[in-house]
Amino acid sequence: MPRALLIVLDSVGAGGAPDAAAFGDEGANTLGHIAAACASGEADRQGLRRGPLAIPNLARLGLSQACELSTGRPLAGVARPDEPAGQWGVARETSIGKDTPSGHWEIAGRPVPFAWGYFPNTRPAFPPELVAKIVAAAKLPGILGDRHASGTAIIEELGAEHVASGKPILYTSVDSVLQIAAHEETFGLERLYELCRIVRPLVDPLRIGRVIARPFVGTPDGGFTRTGNRKDFAIPPPEGTILDRLDDAGRAVVTVGKIGDIFAHRHTGREIKPHGNDAVLTATLEAFRTLPDGGLVFSNLVDFDTEYGHRRDVAGYAAAIEAFDRRVPEIEALLGPADVAVVTADHGNDPTWRGTDHTREQVPVLAFGPAVAPGSIGLRTTFADIGETLAAHLGLPGSGPGRPWSFI
Image (cartoon, rainbow, N blue to C red; front, side, top):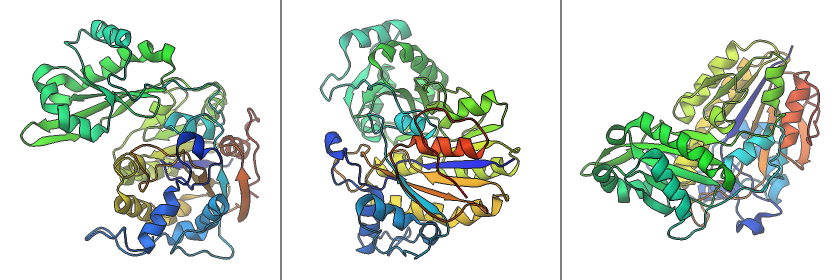
């Protein structure tokens, strides 16, 4: 039986979403603007990278063609082979959002069937009755923050007060999220996780997608740094994702990175959670080496989003894409005769864009493997086509709105 590998490059969008203006993102183009910055020398950084975006392997598979299909423009400074070695195309999100759960659930075959709730960009941002319930239920001395904020900026601003007062830092963004930052040692990591578990049902009536634990360490004098012990507490996805169907069929499922959190640990199989893109990809490849026939490894590389997109670090983002590109041959070498790999994204996060939040974009889709016939898969009108195509490849019955394309 064939196997499948699904890798989500978190936030590596390709621009061109027809409804981007409704999200304030008309013209956003993560890959396009990064490539343009690299080609013009604006993404050079001493000791990190320089020159045009160096992604020969992704270009060989058809990434530039996918971006041109999405926006009408190829990637600046990136080779564009006449006949790519992989299948290439673009997928459009139908869920009403530009957040991580919406993108991943739709990739897995189930678009979000409702509108997410959001907290307003006001001070305070959270309803007073919600804050009162959180403080009472968790026996807290109060909270800090209570507004839209950058996670790194708010711990720098309020970290010392948090350590002194014991009040956790609660903040949000344009996403459907409530984030809680607390010191791993003075507040306690497990206590932070328990606080998130308390908050999760309290925000369910508001349709808030995720409650996220954001632990950090450090001192007021030396500064504070977020750690890799982030944990997401998400609303469970709609029934019928490819993970549900694989588990129900008794197939092997391995989820790497934050996939387990995104899917509320439902039918997520063996979960592996390393820290950092390189470690996540290494764990992904190790899991695939021993994956039984008929199984799936589903992986998320989050650094593109958290370390570079939200921080509007163009050079860092470009270097991370180049680092992934260098390891594409490792992925190809692992694929057996009937195996297939799909590389895609869940939304955009254009580091050249205003603000610090996700951008509404279409995403590239690259598929490859020994038996995959190269060529265009065109514009897929829902991310759900990805999940349905992998389901068909693995011999699972069709379900949901996605329409599979053929790998052969």
